[in-house]
Amino acid sequence: MVNSDDRNEDDDEERLSILKRRITRREALSKVATTATVVGVAVVAGAGGVLAGQSLAPTKIETKTVTETATVAPTPLGATPAERAVNAVKQLRASGKIPEGTKMRWLLVAFAKNNILPTEGSERIGVQKAINMRKKWEDLTGIPLEIDTLNDLELYGKGIAEGITKAGTWDLMSQRIDFLYDFIGADAIIPLGAFEKKYQPELNTGPCPYYPVFEQSLRDPSGELWGFALCGDWFNYYNRRDIVTDPKIQDAFEKQFAYPLPVEGPALWSQVRDMAEFMDGYTGPQQALKDKANPPLRGGYFFRDTWFSNIEFYIRFYELGGLIFDKNKNVTIDSKAARTAIEDMKALVPFQSRDALTSSWPTMFPDYGGKKVFQTISWASLSQFQGNSPAAKDGGFGVYHIPGYVNPANGKLIRVTVLFDQTSYVVAKWGKTTQKVPELPYLLGQWLADPEIYTESLANPGSISDHARTCQAYDLRMIRTFTAVWPPNPDIEPGRRGAMEAFDITIPLSVQPLRLQGLKEIQDLFGTQMNAYFTDIQDLDTTVKNMQKGFETVVDRFGRDKQFERYQWIVNNFPAPLKELHGIK
Image (cartoon, rainbow, N blue to C red; front, side, top):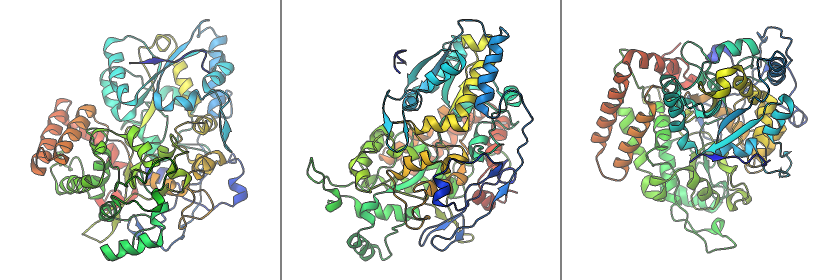
């Protein structure tokens, strides 16, 4: 069911290197300067940690600054993407290309409603008072916006239906860019490359480009642009830092497992499993709640439902050296990598709530905050919906690098993560306004993606605050948003930007979404098969063979050559650890 909003409510590493630099507190408190210097991320590991096969001492930073000259042609429309978008709308109106009375209708994913329509008068303390982004757009352009909201798991069906029926319900849609080729195949969305060239949204140029993986995820193998990022959907690892820093817990863990408790985050998935066993049922002092008896802690909450279990599978699969296709276009799901990944995922099932088999983030988020679970992997937004929770108040939100596997061939530890369900803005082909002025919904998307407008929406009270542009990690509003809940970890530049360091390390290790035609069917297939194994309905061999056979069926239905080409776009843009692992130049 679509909920109509009340109108009264208020190139990869070579093309763009993003490397980390130290900044002073004074700089952190200053607004990001307009400069063509792109700064980003270094490879850092905490005590005893290893990342991308490099063993680094605690707090050691590799520093390099890369200066790029923006290749943006001069334009009379304005200095920023937002200015160009607004002025272009005004010019289109003045020329009569936008008729009087024109309005747009927007399908917005429900979890991002507070990004756009925060409660009037509310404030994210120390960050920002509410900014109604719809009102701001309407005041600047004079173009009214009607906004409908829809649950994220329902977006796909509505988007495909728009293409099939040509109903023209919406002009701009929030959709998962994972399903790009399904939307193209259904004739539901339009390409944006011509408008990008004309209006310059600065997605990979300027002082605040997208992190490369986000920019690449919005394109097809030809480089054509199809959307703008709504939020940054990458996964980090989290655990109850208030518990792991307890010396008594540390001693007990080492006695049981004969190695130190990884206080600065587990480097290996095997450590995650040991921690799940050790913490499951814990009722120590950190569990004390004022309003109820100490709840027994569960060892973790890792998605094992028939949808989101795909996330952890792909993280583990890639870390283990898995590939979807070999160089001869053979499907290689039935592999040691897949079997190990799924088997290791099942090993966590006994130590977590049965909810993990049937539910997903709407249950996991409050369970973590409510001190019901010890560890998880999740989006940066884990805290955004329950920042006043017991775990948050007691310093129980530790954010760390994603765990990994050791490559037996060379002894290097491989740690990567994935973009999954990358929620973005796409222009609906059959929208009533799109049909008349296709530039208009594009310009709304460019305006929303502007570095300042985008940051304002992420900083809104109650917003989902996962970022995708490089400068946002150095913006005081975003720093405060995350340090408010996640205090800095000792081995990640103490006192500077809190959780941002962990995010900045993880983002360049992200793999693009798996985007193939028929992907929704593939995700349902994989999730259902894995869930049957997790619940002892079928064995591992049957599970993996069914995944292989089903995947081949979908791939061949839409043409294996084309599907292979789409996957090679992802492989050619692998993060550095996977490029090295597979010998990709």
